[in-house]
Image (cartoon, rainbow, N blue to C red; front, side, top):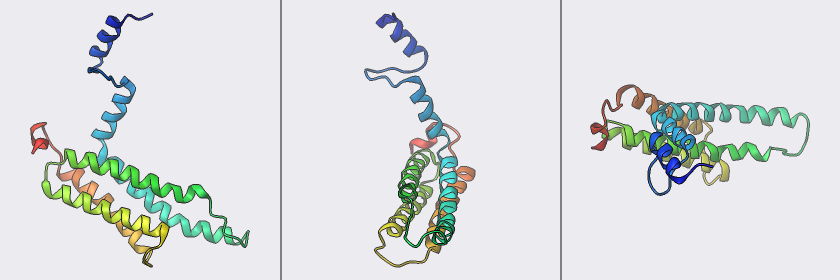
Length: 160
């Protein structure tokens, strides 16, 4: 059995301190997300575009086998995953960008992306599917630009 002093020593050694310590594996996952938020954002935007492109193909192939609409429930649920992952990636990218205008661009692209995806699911306005692709690619491009041109070189620049 590990004593409380031994546990505190171990947590100090791995860099976890405080009254409510985070497990070291959770800490490493958070560092992975924070350090690669733009890459995650690019990947999420591209996966969303593939998902949007695959949806019509899924419907066409399904309609040849059945007369009823048998869209899998999980297929629409993926949209919520894209919104969540894109929010996390924008949140951490905004915290780590060196340019203030990129904060506005990233949040604007995310809001546009979220509105288009939610509208696609509940159909408030009839809009072209092209806007889904445009919103996903715009968000992915904003992350590419941020990754290439707007990264902080030291800790001080991100505090502005």
